Image (cartoon, rainbow, N blue to C red; front, side, top):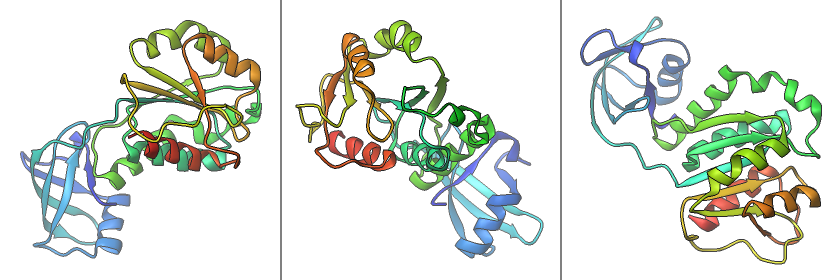
Length: 237
């Protein structure tokens, strides 16, 4: 936790917050803070600043906070991600958030197992928690938008054209003839589609191509989803 993320209901005074639970445990056990220490804090959806520890015990952490700086800017990037395996999902969402992705769509694909859509990790509370962890890692305060789309064809046909309009759209595809760019792309914003391990099937790639996506490859190696996402974003931003 590189930043203590605050919510509006944490405030018990104009500039004082009271925290319990996970954040209290982390500050005590990892930061090993004491009264008089300062921590980096940020208000969800708002500014970042400093928090002066005025109380820290078994029951609560209280901070006097001064929020006076903007959080880091989001990348002009929408990530369209085939729903990963449940045990991978948390890592991918947290990592994409920490990298600054502005918007995430979790979508269906032929290689996505139907059982994945029943995973408790798709519960709104868990998806929010993973994004919060990503914000705390990156010293950010603004949650990326996240939406689920269980039907591939209607999403590609009815929604993607408006999402990609005016920008660049790329789909990661292991057998594409073109390498993924190693420099910032233009025009922005960028919409990046990443399939399951092994990629989207040919018919899905063709559907994406028809609404403006250009297939690109990271080479002959088959990468884990979280590795592919981080590598692609790192190459293009």
